Image (cartoon, rainbow, N blue to C red; front, side, top):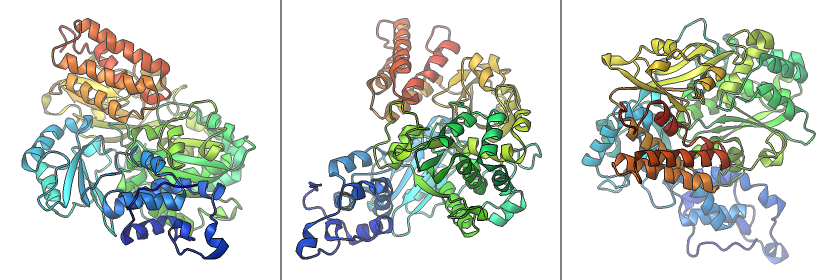
Length: 620
C-alpha cells in the first residue's frame, strides 16, 4: 500500500521504543528498520500479512499514550508505517476514543467524574472548586506539567466522588482515587503522589449465603494457592469430567440468562457456537462496564480474578474456543493489574496454555484494554475495537455466534454471567435453577449507590424486592425522603417511592416498566435536582453516540436540546408539545437505531416524565 504519511513528522526514540514493546522491532526498512539493498530492498510484504496485524492498532495507540501522554503525528506515522494502515484510517480510530489524545497534553492528567452517582456526593461542588482554584478543564498548570478534565462515570460509584490520575512515562502510572476531595485533586495537579488504590469493604463480606461474591474480601486475589484452597479450579476439573456436551447440558438446564442487560439464554448462545464448523472459535469476556452507576464487575475482577479466568476456561472448553479475550474498560487500572497477575499465575501452573491441566485442551487469554468508549460495551462494537477499527456496532444478521471476531464464531458474555457458570458446573443445572424464580434463576449482583448509608455491590437471589435492597444498604441517610430510584443505569428507568415492592426479576421489572439492565440501583433523595440529572444523562448519550446511524446521532442531540429548552423555561410551543417531541424522538431512536445505545437513550428521560411527572405541572 502506498501510504501518504504526515510530512516532516517522525517518532522520537522514546516513541519508537514504546511501539517496539507492542509490535516487536521492525523487520525491514519498510517498517522503519534497516533498509536492504538490491532487489530485496525494493519489495515489501503486505496483503494478508499486513492485515493480520491490524488488531494491534489499539494496543499501539495505548503504548504511545502511556509513554508521552498523547499520540503525536510522528508516532501515528510510525504506527501506520509498521502496520500498513492509511494515516486517515488510524486517525479515525484514535479520535474515536475519549482516553486517547491527538493534541499535545501534559504527562500528568486528572480525570474528575461528574456523572450521576458522583453528583449525589458533591461532584459538582468539587468540580466548581477545582475550576475556581486551578482553572477550567484543559488549562495547564503554571509549569505546563499537569491538567484536568471532567469525566463520565469512572465505575467507582460505591466510593464517590471519584477521580482517575494518569501519569505518562517509561513507567506509566494510572490509579483511581475515591473518595476524593477538591484538596486532593489540587494536590495531584500540583504534582503530588497519588493515594493508594481505593478499597471498599464488601457490605455482605462473610455472609455464608453469598455465591458469586463468597471469595471477595476473603481470599487473597493475588494468590492462586489461596484461590485453590477456597475451592478454586474444582469447577474446571469437573468440567473436564463432564466433557463439552455435559457442560452445555448443565448450562442449558440452569436457565442462566445473561447478566449484561440483554438477558439472553446463555445455554442457547453456547450451543450455537459449539456446533459451528468454522474454526477457530473465540471467547470474549465483556468487562467494559461503562454504564453510569455500574461497578459490580470491577468488584469481581479486583477481588476474585482467578474466578473469571477459570470460568472463561470452562466456557472455552464447552464451546471449542481456542482463544479468549477480556475486553476491559480503560478506566479500571486496578482490575487490569489483578487480572494480568492472575493470567500469569494461571499459565505458570498449567491452568492456561497448550495443555490445560494435562487434558490436551489448548486455551489462553489476552487482555484488550478499552479506551473510553461506552459504545464498546455492545458486543459487535467490541469486535471492531479488538480488530483495530472504530468501535461502531455491526448490523445483524449475521449474528456473533456465526460471524463474530475476525469473522469467526464467537461467544460474548459479561463477567457476572461467566462466574455464575462455576456454580452451575460444580453443582448441576437443575440445582442452580432452584435459586431465584422460574424465569430468573440464580442470584443477581446489584450496584447500589447514591443516597444510601452503605453503598456497594450486593448479591441477592432473584425475587428480592427493591425495598429489601434499600434496607440492606441502610436506607436513605439523614432522615431525608426518597425521591426516586434509577434502575439499570442511564439506559434504564426510574421507579418512585411507591414502587419499592417491585420484585427484582427480569419479568418483575419488565412488568413494572423498567429494567435490571447492568444491575444499577441508584438511590436519589429529595435534594437531587431531577431535571438537571436528566440533562446530564442526555448529554452522556449525545457524547457517547458513535454517530454511525442517523436516528441515534441526531436523536440524542434533539433530546438534549428539548431538555435544555424545558430547563430554561422556554419550551417550543409549550411544555406539552415539547414533551410530545421528546417522546416522538425517543420512539424514532427505539425503532430505527442500529444498536442498544440509541434504542435506550431516551429510556430514563421518558420514564421520569411518565412515572415521576418531571417538567409537568404539579411535579415534585
